[in-house]
Image 1: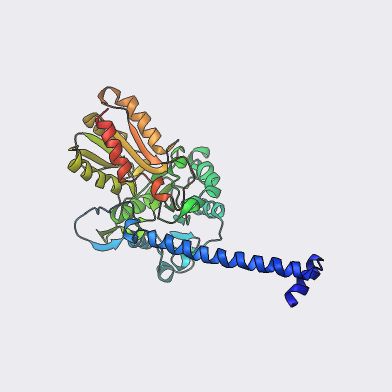
Image 2: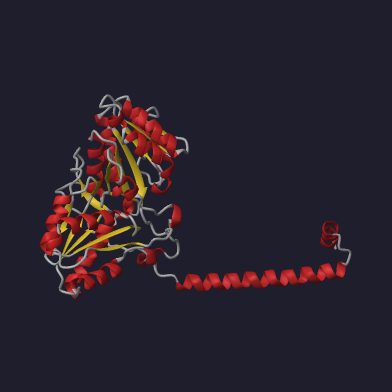
Length: 391
């Protein structure tokens, strides 16, 4: 009755019987809705695949002699530890970096080097980039973390119009070469549209930058330390699904990986497969499947460096095999595979047995529940190999 009086006061409807009747109908609908919702949830849960099937790749570790077993975030932590120890001017900062970061890449470094050198920034990517440029311009070394690649866009102007052009616009008087951005990127299984993107091609269009993508712990450490020492501003896009999935024996000493150099991970004579980051591991599995099921011998190349990229190695492989497939998670249109395909067909045209093909993400926002259909997985890549050898 108190509920009835309250509704009368709000609605002005004095027909209490009508109100009670409507309330009864509403409650019935709510109960049915809740039961249906529980039933749907139960059915949906029962139909979910086992967790181990959610991953779209199998990790293929690299080897570099002896070392300490590390996953990728351990290797990155080790690299930053060495950088902070080697150069007393090095500063490490970003959102939540002080306590270790959301991916734990900087864990314990503030305790070791103090809050004046390892610290949190405000939640402002434009401010992080602007501050990093200022730090590097004074001659200090800046390692700045953008927490997710999807949120690098507020800092886009600072990076492409200031950092990349500082040396040129000042006639060589100033630069911010001792500047490295660490940027977690790519699919992770549940990131959806704001935590899954791969925006490397946006920055590949910018002279003055270096852009790299590691495939695992050994490469991640070597590339990060190479970027820290490089006289140009650098961006390291780190596939975040590899932070814990990738485990290798990583040398503990200070070493660097050559920037601008691609790696041949598997020799082959029939088809060249080119990828970077997580996609390299998809292609390595695809190469095995192609050999078993199609008797096709694939050469697998990790591009590693997006800007500049290894034109010599890619063209040498393309001329050898005559067939090239490029795969990446970013959308098809204007993805970096477009640049590779254009260059290969321009420089290697008379050696090609078929047009260069691309297997990529679709030209849509990155989906959540439909992520498995969006990614260029082994099935799509293997199907493309069938097409290119039968052209």
